[in-house]
Image (cartoon, rainbow, N blue to C red; front, side):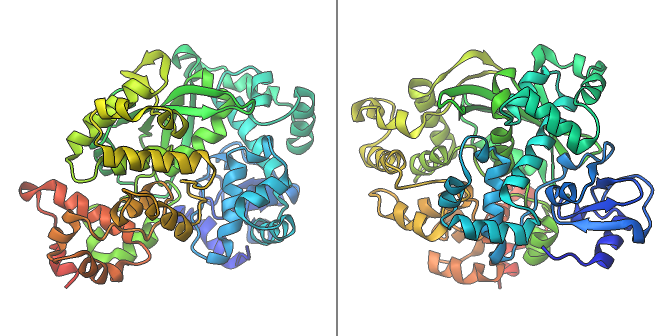
Length: 498
């Protein structure tokens, strides 16, 4: 990624948060690299070099700043199609893919050759995928040492190192001091106050973030026993696969941090080995890679009432598919009741119920094993049972993936080929499971009524002005409609699209 030094230096001087996570500044006089928003005295221009990733800064010989902590920088959602493959690979590395699989497997998952992956990755991030992965492991270890009381051995393993000796040696050679220096400072009153050894992390985002609007959407659709919304706090269960292939059930609790553009994430100790995976899922769930400055400017008047509105994602694509299928032509409340019944009867119980949560949502394999009659007794009609089993079978067979790295057109085509999955369902899945910013279920009744048009074709025509952010436009319209006549939005939707 080519960076203009003059533009970057202006961003550093202004501590412009729009650039946080997009580049890092190395300071030759200190040997440290920082985020553009670091609160230290602005270095002289001639002492600065600018790097497109933390890995590139470390490759150039710089150590991470202990004040602004580069490992806490928000991820970047880029808009240049030529960078999408490199970004997809980076996202998988961030979630620990190379900790248990070789580089050729990563290239195959992205759908390109290993040679091509190396080339585009170096063009985008200035380092090889392996060098990038090594930096991510070190930064995660630094984060665990600073923010948790995990023993150093567990920190090394959780960060993806094969041995403590390897971890200690690489950490000291790269950062100039032993891991114990951070471990000593981690045993403080703040960590001691965390109950039961829970792990606490921060996830940064680019402001604004319409947190209450996001929680309204998730809370209205919360599945009993699986997720809950209490005031500003969202809690849900998770089912994750460990490196040894075993499945572990746990939970996560997320709340906003006062006076910081970050969310606080609390996890139980049982998920220490899955931290990168969990944080990646939560970034997708809360759409933390979004650029609200760009999106809101494009949507114009539509975004005035709720700036920073995000498209809620998911921690599991199959769960969203079941939500969409079950929710066809019934109320949100009715869908919640049925989904809660499915989780209670067919999901995995938590070892110990916590925060009112009792089960994880059933996986595709679990749901496929449920007999048709049992699903019928749970209240699911036969046509929807067939659609749920069809999606589950495609996922289990490896013919369908429902995650942000899945190809949009091929995935929606595969979904539409399953009996019982129509355009509305496929587009809703694309919005939330695939994270497609331009997906929109144009046949949605609320969209038609709010925009004052008779059919989906007319919705598509009216919504064309919002491309490539039509998923965000749909959320704005749904939210305005949900507020009801007592809380009319500032902008008349039909005037906006006239």
